[in-house]
Image (cartoon, rainbow, N blue to C red; front, side, top):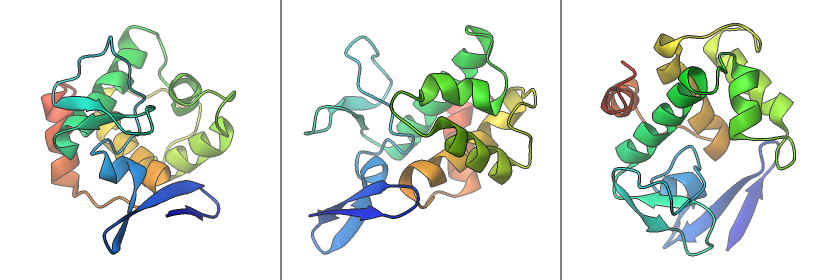
Length: 152
């Protein structure tokens, strides 16, 4: 059974009697697309639908998301919420401006404000909430994934 929550458009899947957002179910809370060339630590493959990566534990999905954001900053010279999300969630597939406004608001920064690596845990936290409609992870768990990514 698929249910769409209004506003964010999060897909939920029936798992027994419990409904879980796709990113939580895949232990990929930022919904990182599967790419055979990306051999993420803890990645176990691709979801049955064939689009998003699956991880053995959510902390590995958080780690991968933090690494992506860090790479967008250092490799691709993208330092603001809008610049990062234009690459992560391009307008051809997403409402990127709405996503960026949500994330920036949750972080307490402007969408075009220059960020640094210390902002990554807060950005990951906000992105998880946007991607899934909820964020079931503690700050310490998110920080663990960010630490594993080498960003804190």
